[in-house]
Image 1 (cartoon, rainbow, N blue to C red):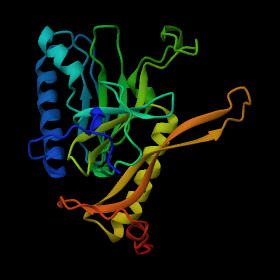
Image 2 (cartoon, helix red, strand yellow; image 1 turned 90 degrees about the vertical axis):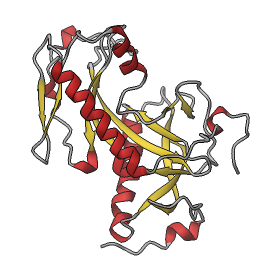
Image 3 (cartoon, helix red, strand yellow; image 1 turned 180 degrees about the horizontal axis):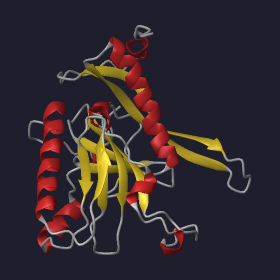
Length: 270
């Protein structure tokens, strides 16, 4: 059943929602603009080049030459983020990061799996924008080897929440989701191992089914999973899960089949 109208996550965009292809094109366009702007700026430190399957190079330039307005806009609306961000909270809920509102487990979401961004993000000092080396997994981007990014001296790392030195470069996954009922887009952003595992399990499903249904996306619901930690002092650990409940054509706005039968009719692709 749909979530209560009082839930801020149910707000619908009255404008005609963009298609997945338009979103993907816009992501690439904004990334190209951002890359051109960075290349035009005078770097204060050497750039880091990252090879990809296609032979292209993803480049991040560390610079302090952007005006305050551009710095602020980059912080609140990076080109790699589609609409509102979703995170998995310590309480075991999927929540929108801007207002902390939980998203109901009953909401159907289209997982735009081929628009998943992977790579590294480095958060600098307060007031500094993060540095991103990320690309589309299904466009051939290869996550760089951590050692090629620099910042290898553990003694210079800041302490994390656990009191231990925390690597400034964090492995991130960005998964784009679209509500079936309202057309609203979200980006599930995660740097945790359990979060990346959840995205990985969904992409494994997508890889299998796209062989028999290449023009469809999976429909998921955001569920709570978990496991008993080997350390009894830790106990039960909450983990996110993208429960596949159906599929929908990429170019169709029709209500997807979220019945169990709809998801079980996949042909064995191997």
